[in-house]
Length: 370
Image 1: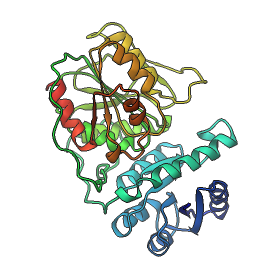
Image 2: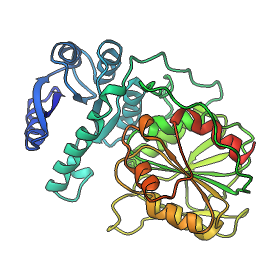
Image 3: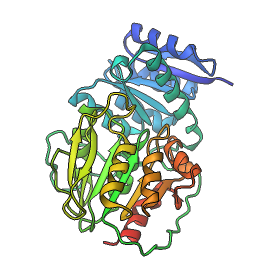
């Protein structure tokens, strides 16, 4: 049976364009459209689609308010369309906070090298989040921001990104501590990553004893805003990585969108290198590249965690880390928005643990010390 999609946008041209793209896939069918957020809320209840694509700026009711209402009344996976601006980044993070599962730039040429690639990507994203429909629950109130002021004006005065409660019972037991010594925590993720990273990082104490690197597939204009938001929510410090940053314990460095993050120097005195990278690489930033660089610099003294995401980025980098004796963890299938990247690591036999999202932060503290 085809996945039923509701397309929401105040532009009749964009509604038609998205509908034509989705209807090209035999596994997708657009069952209705809406021209504003209020119509979307009403049609989410009456049409009961499997997925909703949603614009942010619309008359009558904006997309963020619509997502919030839909998640309370008739929870449905939502894919947001946003502009690649700093304001668009803030609005997109607010939409994820409200319950949206994923986002794409509204200008398809910003995310793909060809028209065919853009069409395929949109179809894949819709099909990927449709699989999570059974796991969506009504949204609980989100946790407030901490009182420590964020270092950037990009930090919205809003609630935290909140994690939807999975419909399955999570395993709460933590893995037994391995006794390994560590010098670095590395986390890679893609689709569903903003919510997952917040869930993990807010569990880490301010005195976390190791530096942390974060690789999230995200456009360049988004990572500044996302790092600022995380910094305002976490006890550790979080910043967008800059070339030459010295790695410090209790600090997390988010790879800037559109670039690659690598290491130079020796453990304990390593610095970050932020480079343009090869245009032939599909992802910027790329988990494989950062993990591979970590393997060269830190050897086996790394805990690498692969969270929710589409595709297999991270598998080959994890393989290199594993060969050096590093410890690899993956998020489990039930708690992932898209079980792609973690599945690739697990199927390759590289992950020593597959853990529910809700316990990963606590498990990291138990494994790496604090």
